[in-house]
Amino acid sequence: MFSVSDAEAIILNLVRSLDNQRDTEFVDLLADNRILATPVTSNLDFPHWDNSAMDGYAVRYEDVQNSSEETPAVLEVVEKIPAGYQPQCTIKLGQAARIFTGAVMPAGADTVVMQEKTRLEDNRVFILTTPKPQEFVRHQASYYQAGTELLPAGIVLNAPEIAVLAATQCTQLRVYRKVRVAIFSSGNELVMPDKRLEPGQIVDSNQYAIASLVRQTGAEVLMLGIVKDEPEVLKQTISDAVANADIIISSGGVSVGDYDYIEQILESLNAKIHIRSVGIKPGKPLTFATFPNENCLYFGLPGNPAAVLVTFWRFVQPAIKKMSGLADNWLSFVKARSHSELRSDGKRETYLWGKLHLIDGFYHFQVAGGSHTSGNLINLAQTNALAILPVGKSLINPGEEVQVLQVFGC
Ligand SMILES: Nc1nc2c(c(=O)[nH]1)N[C@H]1C(S)=C(S)[C@@H](COP(=O)(O)OP(=O)(O)OC[C@H]3O[C@@H](n4cnc5c(N)ncnc54)[C@H](O)[C@@H]3O)O[C@H]1N2
Ligand code: MOO
Ligand SMILES: [Mg+2]
Image (cartoon, rainbow, N blue to C red; front, side, top):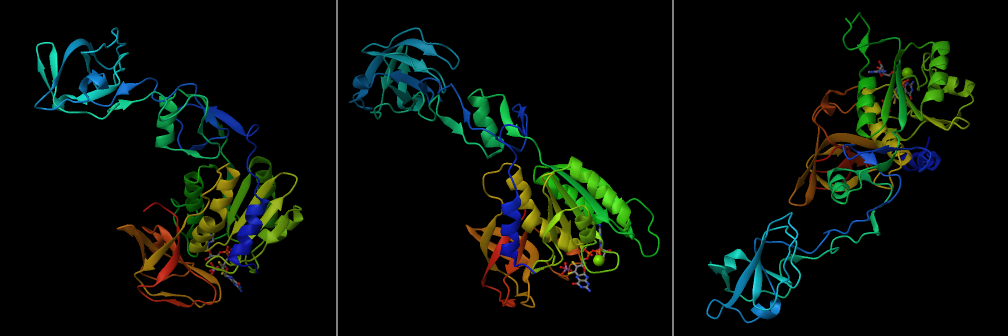
């Protein structure tokens, strides 16, 4: 049985990122949540030209350096420059231009005085303050210089990045294709959620949970459905999936029961099994294998629903993120103050689900009420984090610090 950190290292060492040329596609600015495959460079400076940060007057600093309410400089207004207009005049000594936020600075002017610090009489403006030299001028290229790297490869394109790319006219983006993840559930007792339950049957909730998690991680889902605990059917399902997916995730059938066939089928398909069990609670019988020639990874998650979510978050999610080309941030751990008593038997690294809150810059963790056993998924609803009790630590008291894996934003 591997420790959690050894299992993580084994998995991540075997994950190859998609190829940054071959495994890419072009998307436009309406793409969401995609990962840049190559760095982006723009040929536009930002700002594109010197412009005003205020509604006011563009002036020459030397004209206004001794201005005040008592002794205002008086300047002739020679032009009106709204945003989107190219100034025609050059501002000479004793002159100013009416200017608006975002408008192009006229030649000759180097400073903007905001309109609240001026008074206009006919076409003469009285400057009632001494501005700082170059005040309220947004200089060309002061935020970004054309030809330098704008965004690095390996980052997610979220709203801020999309805005940057739009502003600098980078409209065609080379991103990694989505990782293809095939998922299925194994178990004779399983039925679809809309089917009438016969005695002994339960709903296949795992497949829906995994599909949602995979999509949230930015990958594409191939739903293979429910597969009976029959070796031939399982073998056919897995060998078909190997040809079509980068990653296969199954749930169930990885323990020691008579109907737990996953490992023997992987072996019969010449997969190399790297992990058969991990010292994690829930999730001990996690299976991890590779199909070396096909470059395909296999995660056999335990059937218990809480074990599925915990092992996905701890092992599968970082693997998908790494394969997707994301450069870092595959897992997000934080230190939090526990508001609850947290208990484990101390034998396996134990993950307890609950709610992480950020209050005044400090994280606080509140464990979910109800039973924390891997067959219970009901109290996983509305949680966003997993508190971690290391091996040998059987109690964390309220008020003590605890390591927490953040699985959704808070
Ligand atoms: N003798 C032992 N028995 C068990 C051990 C052990 O070490 N020795 N380990 C236990 C642990 S820990 C776990 S976790 C489970 C893992 O079981 P399997 O991966 O073999 O899964 P199944 O036997 O198929 O099912 C277990 C459980 O989960 C329910 N299930 C299965 N699939 C789904 C699904 N798609 N949606 C919802 N629920 C599902 C299933 O009905 C069972 O209740 O083994 C322990 N046993
Ligand atoms: O690992 Mo199992 O999930 O403890 O029941
Ligand atoms: Mg079993």
